[in-house]
Image (cartoon, rainbow, N blue to C red; front, top):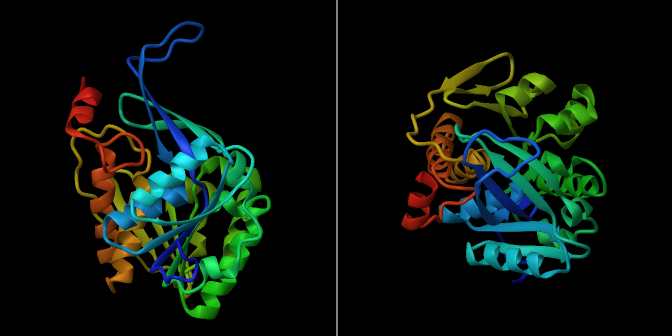
Length: 300
């Protein structure tokens, strides 16, 4: 890996291990719950990088993992996915336990560990990108300085800067007004959020001549909010047999950004995001690589 190689898309944020748990029935407290469990590479920013790479977009991921075998394996897996991985190694690698219910909806228990301590990133890791994608998980702690650095470089070099709102709990921890103020200070070109995040943080207010807000609403049409209260919606294609919503939002961002980098208009980019997210919804975790045998096992 060479830090000075140009990359169309640079993603900054988390690379962690996902432990995805499908319960055989409704969870019962205080006793055993039969389940199917799968370990996979996760982390919102690294998911976007891997998904975008699957579309042929030249990508780089920047983050921190632990100085441990799990971190080494995750970095290797991301590199195999075609992503230029620029990582710091210190402490222990983060883990997210994801409980998936019968409808495919997930509840997450994150322990970001080393991922939350990313700091002191060389400019050369970031510079030269056509687009830089950030995760709001990194708004807190030492990683904030890296986001500020990335935003300054993006604006100086004319790169497209994007940010994903990431989590309702995260918005609550900051408070909606502070959360919006932090995002505004970065001046992103696109902000991605789901409907609940947008409602909780009043994120549609972020739409300006500089910033477009894209709000995903599950199976309902996706909203695209522009300046001067202008908006549009894009229908979501139906997906049969949804297995796991984990990573679908990251796949959407990857499809959207890959299309934008290929000079698509915003609404066309939303359609590209829908198409990639649809593929992620039928697979476990944030992946597009499940084998035929694994798909059959999940359906059993």
